[in-house]
Amino acid sequence: MYRFLTQNAVAIVFLLLVAAFAAASLYGSSLLPPASYEPLGSAAFPKALGLITLGLVALQVISMIRNHSGTDTETPTDAQTVPRSFSWEKYRKPALMLMVMVLYLAAMSYGGIDFRISTSVFLCVAMCLLARPDSLKKVVLIAGCSIALAVILDLVFKHLFYIDI
Image (cartoon, rainbow, N blue to C red):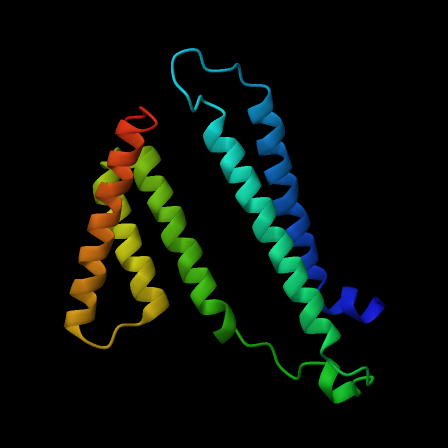
């Protein structure tokens, strides 16, 4: 058990934080007044997000436990536990994604850029970072899908949730 906790300490702390935010979303949505003229109400979206997030946290915990139970119980040697050098290579893609997300939020908050435009650009850049397309055809396909998804999201928020983003 101690080995499981030490090997997965960061993941466990992150999952606890995500679960706390999901619980706060559920608690906050329970404090909202009930809807009087529409069937969904204003609490439907935060409740759905909270429940989906808690479900994903539960699936991740189950996955971590199953992966740990499949490993052998040998004690690692010193050469296996202590990394010889620190490499930024494995942190490059998450750092780029974080930077793209911060730029997206800044563009929406401070730049006054339209939701459809900023979301299309964000999705296109994020998908290109994750997929690393090797041809222009794939980049055009990613751009088309990101534009379509941004327009669909805008329509859903405008006509289903009555929120003009």
